[in-house]
Image (cartoon, rainbow, N blue to C red; front, side, top):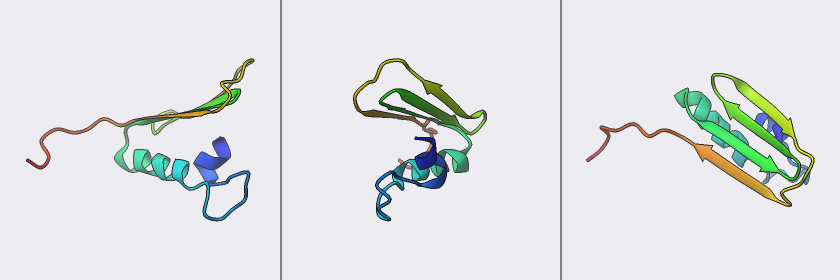
Length: 79
């Protein structure tokens, strides 16, 4: 999970895959706010621009992947 977020690396090694998580992280970095959580099987990586990465391992698997991207919207934009 960390490799996909930091280096756009995927276990399939296909050049057209593995770009999405890094793209989400870059938006969070550019704006200086937001948070990205990726839960996959027995692990979790949380990223935010202030604290960087937090990595967690769990005893049980979720049998899949869940991505939670929170990004605060700024009011006062286009009408």
